[in-house]
Length: 367
Image (cartoon, rainbow, N blue to C red; front, side):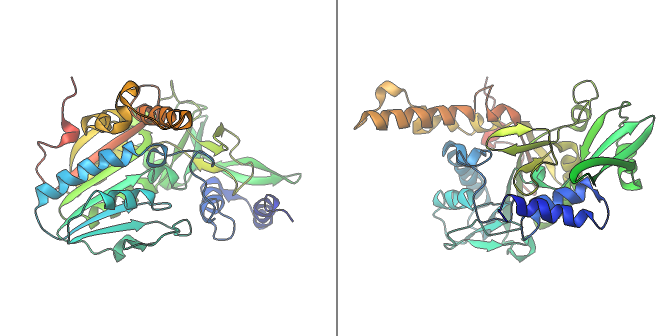
């Protein structure tokens, strides 16, 4: 049996015992320890993978975050501090940030559901549970595309009744079915005063708010910095703009709406409700210090002071290949901050607790 058929056959076998809510299908397809998309030691992220993230796109991302880290340390003084990448993946980002900080009494930690992709353990603390990380006296949590990797439900409004999509099997193929949505999802929209239009789809994870609340409980004094695809709830659930929701599948840098194809072999994701995160933080005593596009955040931190943004005619190259490599790296860096790149699509939420709100570099006015 080929590897490509294994996950699909496993899913069909599970469906013999009954249909699955799509949320459970996503959980299995992404995180099943045997064939889940993120459970494999094979790297799925990067130019040779299925999609690219900001830290892997360009070193400019960690360069800018290194500046934030320096600000954080200077404000906190010489106290034991914890710098934690939650959802660390292969650990590249937290390793890079460690290189920006030579101070003692600073703990660097990477947290992820699976640590199979972490190839080098170094002197960084690696764990699958945030509760295993010592807090220190100050904490900086970084979450890069953590929340859009949470399993989510797919819902649709039919004749005034909210339905939840399930996965079934018909004639040997995975297919959709619908059932009346449970009270948790009815409450989700009712409590937010959101009314879906008839025929409108919506993608929701009840874990968005609960996971963020868990992060808030870890921080006694510090920052939570969240990078992700998403919108405030009024934009996210706009029937005029997002009639079919935001769920998508990624494989080979191509996006598809065929969410049931090749379970375990493609990423499944949906844009998040940033309002859930903001409210959870504010209930726990956090203040929202920044919420805007990633490009604005990185520019305010001085991302363009990286050498990749220096004029090309000021560079000296040993060969034509080196010049071509520099130009490609420069183009990748520009994608982080230009209006038509990843920097425009991702939003950044920064919330702080027990720290002064003024004077942060990311709040600097650019114009």
